[in-house]
Image (cartoon, rainbow, N blue to C red; front, side):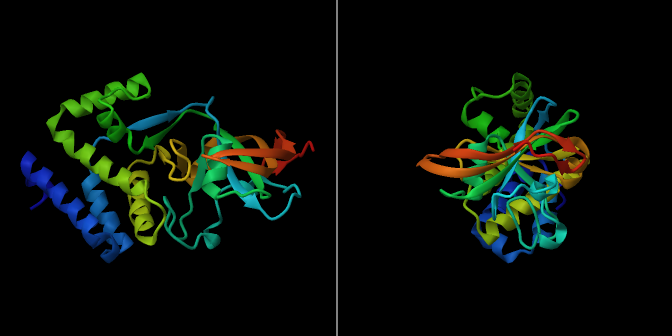
Length: 274
């Protein structure tokens, strides 16, 4: 039976059955393509929470470097080239990279698994115009806190309207299920599901710049997966650093020293100050 021919209870049961099958081992059995088709069906016409990215917002892309020498271009810290994107990631499939970034340097250090002595490059970026990014887990957080979460007032009001419509209870169920898998440590099955879901969301609307989700490695941290074309056309660098990790105190608290810095760019080229 097609979803459009189901009444409310039948549709709710359909979602329950799909989620139980996925949790029961179907993620391992299904191909990425079949997972995508199933999630595309489950997410169709469900409300999606869009979080605004303002021109004043700043977030960071980082990676561990092999040495302390200044690199010439910002491409060194952008998304990986297609030919080097070999495996599933939390939000990407092989040969289809995304730009992983986050809020705050400590989150980046945690996400990349930085250790004492590591040399890390940090690229700070911001939008050149206002963008919208899909917020995974917003429905789940609102529901679990009974609306008393620390969210933008407009977003809370939007979720409340969604919640008051009985048709949308499945949106809360699906958000809880997907958020659960995004919170799990990396594994082939986890990444197969989460990357398929990300592709469904990013393919659903060309105006969605990316996905924001909670970090697994840095508690309460916010990670972003940005479309490469958005990075190329609508994000600009504000500064870049090369730092050395000098200490790790636990709980995501790092100490580091700056080795090189710049906030001068000409196109893709960096003019290092020191």
